[in-house]
Each structure stands twice: as C-alpha cells, then as structure tokens.
Amino acid sequence: MEVKERVFDVDEFWRFVNQPENVDKHFELINGEIIEMAPPGWEHGTLAGEIYHYFRLYDPKRSLGHPTVDAGFYPADDRSIVLSPDVAFTSIKRAPEREFKKWAPLMPDIAVEVQSPSNTLAELRRKAAIYLNHGTQLVWIVIPKKKSAEVCRLDGDGNVQSEFIGADGSLSGEEVLPGFELELSVLFS
Image (tube, rainbow, N blue to C red; front, side):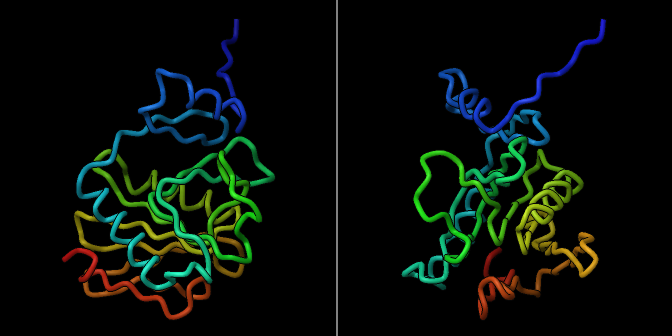
C-alpha cells in the first residue's frame, strides 16, 4: 500500500496554523508541504528590525509602498505556497487594494531573508527562486556570520542570478525603491 503525504492549500494551511497548539509556532508552506521553522534568534530579529526601520525611514508616509515583517504572502496563481519573509517591501502599485486579515495573494517586490543558524544558504536560495518566479523583483539574503548579503534577481532569460555583496558594500532598492541604499557596515554596526 502506498502512503501519500497530505498536500495543503492556503486555506487548509490557515486553519492548521491557527489551531491552538500551533499559534506560537512559525510555519511556511512550500509546494503544499508544511515546514516548521525555529524561532529566530536575537541577532536575526535585530537585523530584520533594522532593515524594516530603514525602509520606514526612507518612505515614512508609505507613499512608495508597504514594508512588513514576517507577513505571509502567496502567489495568486499557486495556492500551495505561503512564505513569510523576515522583511518585505510591496510597492503601492502592487499592494492589495484592501488590507487582508490573512495572507496577501501576491509576492512582495523585495523579500529579505536573514540567515539563521538553522538555515542553509541552499534553503534560502531555494526560497529566493520561489519568490522571484512568482513576481518578486529582488531578494536579499542577509548573512550575519559574514556580515554580507546575496542579492538575487531574475536575468533576461528568467534564470535566478545572485550577486555577493561584501561587508563594505550596500543593498540597493534598484527600480523598486529608487535611491534606497543600505550600507552593510551600518546594518552590522
């Protein structure tokens, strides 16, 4: 007899994460599979908070878009994925017309993943590909151990390309947040 794993969709996943035994846990949904994630550590939370803070300082009236922390996003055309980047930015032109109590049915324009000791770069690159293949323009993978980052984007052929940014470099908002620059030396100071 073949045992088949259960595949969840967005609605079933919402019910699952809101069960009393799961409310203090953090999960994501990738290809219908529920992935439990370890709570982030102090360094991770501090870096995510700083990045959110710099997004807010750059656009205090949110005229360009909405920064979020740990918000859930899913592609409108794929209900087997729910990701919650550590920090995200969604432009006004793509932001939902109304506020959602649940997850937003789109991927953010910028997704930021801060590497935790429990994450491998391979896992984060896999998530970066999911974001990018579903509408995200930039993914920043922040690597605390090296005080560096990887910037991932799609090339003209739709392939994921990554660029290593060293400790003396900066993260750019590119076309999403024109003029935004976050120096890694400031982020890690």
